Amino acid sequence: MLRFLSPQFRRLALLAAQDPRQPVMIWGERGTGRSELARWIHRNSLRATEPFTRCTAETLSLAPPQGSVLVENFDFLSTEEQSRILHLAETQSWVCPPSPPRLLGARVFLTGSVPHSCASLERLENWKYCFRIPPLRDRQEEFEGITQQLLDDLTLPMGRPTIRGLSPAALAQLKAEPWPGNLRELRDRLHAALNRAPRNQTVLQLEDLSPPQGAPGNTVP
Image (cartoon, rainbow, N blue to C red; front, top):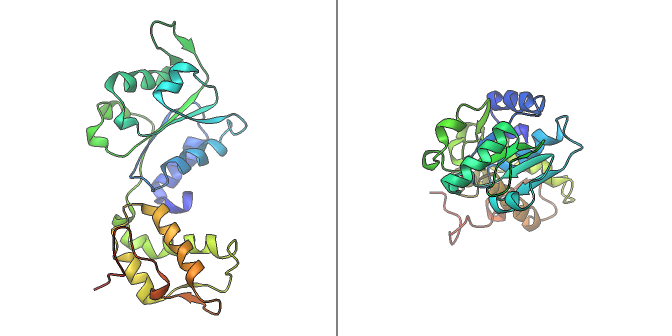
């Protein structure tokens, strides 16, 4: 996961892994790797042997877990739910009336996609570990490298080690698209292209690419 972060956030992730009691906030659109980053920090921390649990505000109320807790789409929660979860993140104490407060050992990871709509934004931005993962469409300078890394991850498991890269036309097509699904969508498109490409090819061609989401065909001008 760190390969797809900027050097600044790569360093921050390494620090977060070494600081296993501090909460973590990760902003980014769907498919940018928010949950994967949370799991990477957990797996590389002193808490790696403890559970990593995806929770909602409702499941936290029923059975607050130990270990690391991931609450996704935090910005869509009510102000009251946000307040309770922030209290847990910052004090490790779960408050849900009429039950008495419970002291937990949980580390809290939060993800969200729309910072400006979050009632708790100012409080979150004071956290030591607050990440903002940019959408793929805003990473034009890094796009070729990201695409090659994803392709390299796929070729051997899929039995296509002879595929070394993309043709200029195929790369231009991918680079021109808006990528609403971000890294996840790009990986899925490359996976489909590898399945479609003839066995004797060494690079993916434009005709190997499936159409982008919501489009009838390839659209490079």
